[in-house]
Image (cartoon, rainbow, N blue to C red; front, top):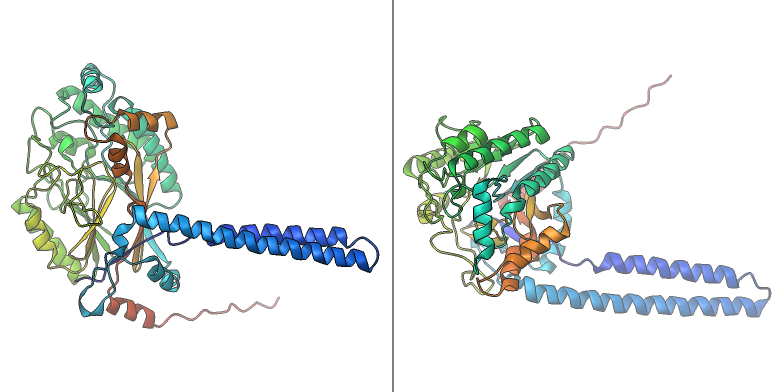
Length: 468
C-alpha cells in the first residue's frame, strides 16, 4: 500500500481570532492605565492598577469563552462534515493512516513547513457545458425549465459563466499558475441536449477563440467528456480540431496524452472516443489506450516521476463516511465501463498518487488502493467552482474556488434543482464537506520522507561586502 495520506485544512482556526481579541483587550488596559495614571497621588495610581486588573480579568474570561466557542464549532464541523476522519485506514509496514485526524495534522505541522517549497500549481475546471444563444438552445432550455425533473445547470448563462472563468484563469496565470486542465464536457454535444450539429461546432469554435483572446499562449489542456462527442456523427474529430492538443500524444488521431512538469507526469485520459456515440454517459478506455497507459507508467517509474491522472468519468464509486456508496451516483452511467481493468493496471505502480475527474457535478474524495480519487463540481452549476492544485515536493494541496459570478446566478442554479429527491440535500452533495473543498495529500512514502529529511542541505554563503 502506498504512502499517501489525506488531511484537512480546518484543524483549528480559533487561535488567531482569540489572539486578536487579546491584543485589543491589552491595548485597552494599557490605555486605561495611561489615562488613570495622569491623576495625582497614590490613590489615583491604585485606582488605575485596579482598573487594569479588572480589564485583564475580562480579557482572560473573553479568551476562555472564545476558545470554548470555537472548539464547539470545530467539533460540530467534524461531526457533520468530516465523519470519515474517524475511519483509520491502516497500511502495511507501519505506514501512517491515509486519513489523519486534526491532532495528527498538528503534529505534522513542522514537517509541512519544511515541505513548503512549491514545485508548480495548476487549475482544474470541468463541465462548463457552453452553448451560445441559438434556436436549438432555446428549445432545450424551454423544455428543461418546464420539466418537473431537472438539475441546476444554467445552459442559458453558460457563455457568460465561461467568460468569467477565463478571466479568473487569467488572474491565476498572472499569479504564477503554470497551466489549466479542463476535465471534459466543455460543450453540450453527445446525448441529452439534442444540440444541432452546427450549434455544437459553433460552440467549439467560440471556446477556442475566446481562450486565445483572453489567455493568449497560456496553456489550457482539454480532456474529452461524453458531451464533447459530436451529437450527430459521433466521435471527437470536431473537438480535436478546435480544442485538441497534440503535445504528448502518441499519435495525431488520439485524444489521450501526457504532460511532464517538474518531476510529475500528468496523464490525460480519453474515456469518450472509444464509446463514439454518447448513449447514457458512461466512459470506456480501449485496449490501445491501456497499452499506452502501461507504457507511460513504466517510463515514469523508470524516470523517477510521480503520476497524476485526469479523466472525465469515474474509476471508483464515491462513498459516504459509513462506507456506503453516495446516493447521488448513477451506475453505470457515471463510471468508466472497464474501470476494474484500469484499476488493476494502476495497482501495479505505487508512484500513482492522484486521479482527478468531473462528470458528476459534485465535489467528492475517495481513497482506493493508495490513490486519492477526487471529483469536482460543474463550473456552470451550483456551487460553480474550480480547483487550485498546488504541487510540492511531498505534498499536494487542493482548494475549491468559487467563480466570480453574481449571487443571483448562484441562487438561480440552486433553486432550479427539482424532482430528484430533496433539493437541499442534492445541493449540499454538490458542495461536499470541508475535506472535499480543501485537502492536503501527503505523497511521500516513509522511506522517501526519511531520505528527504536526511539529504544534505546546501550551506548559505554570506556575501562579502566589497570595499570601496
